[in-house]
Image (tube, rainbow, N blue to C red; front, side, top):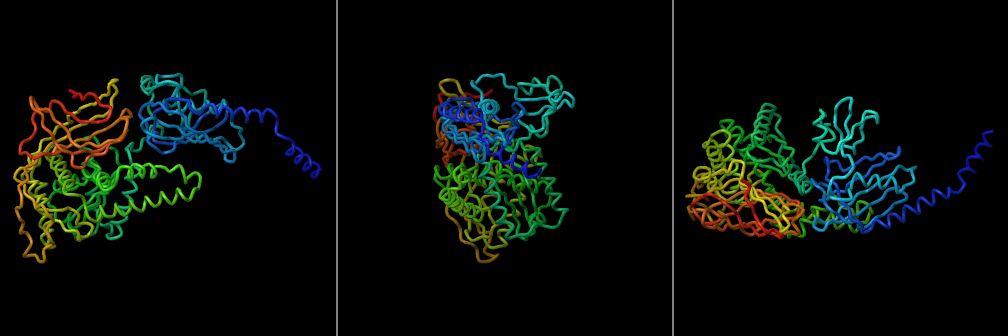
Length: 563
């Protein structure tokens, strides 16, 4: 009997596939050919999950947004389907599409192994990712659970049973009916351009620090730093970018602190023991948070590399589609070669510290913080005096290329003068200017946050050699008085920016006159980007009554001040 059943089984397996299934596959492949060149509107993402679950006629499928600029949209953009690759062995379809300004993106559509792909199912999956027009369509993005009154994203994997579902086109419509958002469906990790690149730098930075110093075992000190650090974030006067911050104490005699990109802040036991108040600690940590928020590591990396290099590298770190999917060893070697080049640059930035300009920028934000939040104008100056004295004890006062990792803050003499004498004006919630193209579409937004005049501050123009003894320390040289105006802000771009560009200068309209300031770092902008920027000029006067700006960007026809 068993032998008879086995014969029947093998006979059944030998039967050719039904003609209907063959026709379905032929029709499916023909349909794929027809999609090339089609234009769709790629939907904005609801959360940061690249995986979207779809339901069609009882078939559970899903698709994955490949990492690129086009996977983190906050509004719909029009894209053109460039290529489709169906892999029968893995039952998946790779769809590559292109936006005219932001380049390429991709989605991989997956079917269960035992399901033959059909046009109907693919079209339904595509409705989750695309719409046929920019305007609202009949697709309901949100699904409410009428029992729990919890609102879910339609592409999640934990929707309620069908009889308890209520569909909504917008979150607002659901909230009006008493629904609350699901904590998982609406969880958003940082939507920060080049965040993966900063996370890679973070790993290199932390690894370099912990290879030389141990984390302190003093939990009392750690809890104190955590409390002060997270308190600063709660009171930070400007909009936080969304980094996941981590504070730690290193067991080291050196009196110093430093920041890693993407949110790592470290302070030594040596400095904590030297500081005499929580406000002094707060000022030091605010300085390091400013390094992170102003993206100084990334900006410094860009200044040391060609534009084409760092933009392509950032894309590859976010998700390389060539060797990761095809196993092409040539592409993999090229990618890893780029990583090695960047690793060397990152280590150099870590070891040598930030430039004097970036240290000054972080100083000004820290001084602003204490003045605005604590009404304290002395604690930061006192903290800098202690760092200056620590430098004196070690036998140097100026820039020195051979200092250890944690001695990364250059020219303490200059920074003490800055903390004592600089005139700083904070713009409160910021002065906002928006740029529009000829069609009235928003291209960019510049928020000016503060300005500073380094009046009566002196510094040496060249690096000073390390001093040989304690008795030689402290003999600073007043080489040049620096009466200079600095203007700090944050600029954001949209998809309406047609190409990458550099900001070289800005013109500020103050009453009846126009003042020109230089952007020394020549800030590089790309579509859908956000970064800090700084402008400067020789003067001992702050700007008054900023009425407008002139800033040359591609496509921009007009800048308007937001009142």
